[in-house]
Length: 306
Image (cartoon, rainbow, N blue to C red; front, side, top):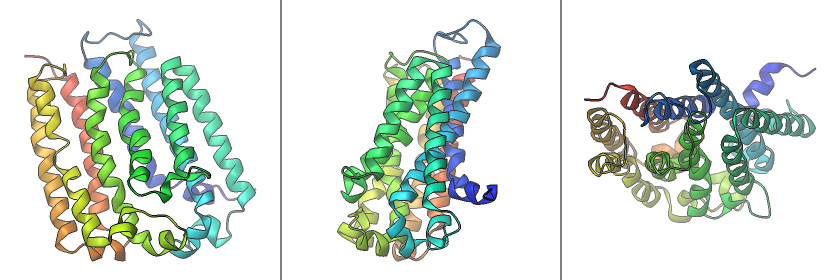
């Protein structure tokens, strides 16, 4: 029996926090949205809470499967970029990795099915994008901005909507408008992880933005995505498209760009630092910023209305 800690490392646990938080916060936002404290699926608040928690577990499990799939097809690249990981180091065999990955996808989709058909639909759609990102013949990771889009859709655009689906129907415009902001943020922010992987990505034929344009130009290209998307929330509130507490959303909409501007400053001051470290401070700040954005939206929707 393989040591469970190796499988835990293979799942990349640090990356599993955001999907869990995103699902919970999406569900809480739906609970506080108009009509308030009403679910499309059940009259029981306990069942609502159960669905939200189950959704968070589903997102974590599916993301673990996504991480596993990516590492399986990135093995030649990881032998260069991250030789200490379980697969390239030989601590985990390919057959064991495949079993873990398949199991995670099956369990995740079963959990989505238990919640409701809309959650299952979104989980399947996210899975399609995940497979397209990593697996030939698509493997969009090779194709510059298309790689960013393929990653941003499941992790930014669909994740909050999936959280919403645990409580209310997704066939309304509000959850999609909410998630569009986070999707645009991830569209740019996702590139930060590519800077330290340039050597292996170049050898593996993956034309990420840093490989295509170089460190400095790629840093400049992604910098607007840390600031401007969040301002859209304020515009949407002003247009009456979001039913969260206006003051809460305004606060979030104007404070997050300040954090984003600081990240831009850290990146643009010395872009070469990004390529020298896998865990650059900017990447940690981006992860924290995502969690603050999710939590802030949940709080804004749960606050009493004026």
